[in-house]
Length: 272
Image (cartoon, rainbow, N blue to C red):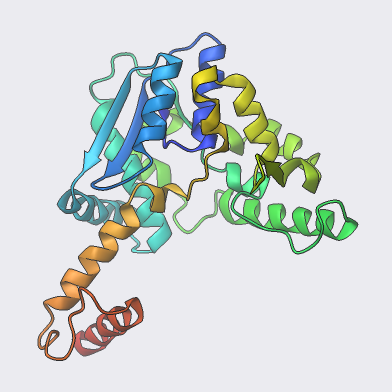
C-alpha cells in the first residue's frame, strides 16, 4: 500500500511504483472539510489504483489523539499529529490480504528543502552553503533513531512497523540530495516560484498527461493539509469555551488564538 496524501512526494512514489509494475492500494486520510482529497483521488484514478479514503470526524480525531498519546507516551504536537494518520491507516491494514510494503513519501521536504526559501540568490556560493546547512539540520532532526519517541513506528504499527518504507529516507536518496545545488531545487514554473523543483520535474515526467499538473501543486505538511491541526484547534477552542466563566467577557470559540492559548495555560496552572 502507499500512503497517498495528495502532495507531490507521495504521488511520485505511487507513480514510480506503478511504472515498476506494482499496483499498490492507495490510502488517504482526511478530515471533514479537508481540501487535498481531490488531488489524491485524481492521482489514484489516473494511475489505476484502488483508492481507500479514511474520513475522520472531529470526534474520531480526538479519540485517535488520545490513543496516539497513550502509545507514544507524549503529547508533543508534531509527534501526535504525525501519528494520527498512521493509526487511522491501520483501519485498512487488517482487511488487506497479503499485505506487503507500506510506502510513504514523508521526508522529502527535509532533503529537498521543501517549504523553505533561501536568503541568497540560488546561483551563489552563499546559497549553496545555506542549502547544505539547511538539509543537514533537517535530516539530523528527522532521520534518526534517537528521536523524541525512538519506538514511534513500532508503537503505532506493532508487528507491521518493519513494513513501512520511507522512500526518501534511504541512503540512495540522501546521496542524490547531496549532489543537488540550489538551482536544482528552487526555480520557477509557469511564472510561479516552486520548491523541490527536481522532484516536481521527475513527477511531471512520470505521471499520465491528464494529471501532470499535480506535480506542481502546492501543499502543506500532512498535519495541516489533512485538516488535523484545524480539527484539534477547534476542539481546543470548545474546551476553552467550557472552562468556568470562560464566556463572561469573550467567546473562546471566536477570539484570537493567543487568548485561547493563554486561557488553556491558566487552566493548567489552576489545576496544578
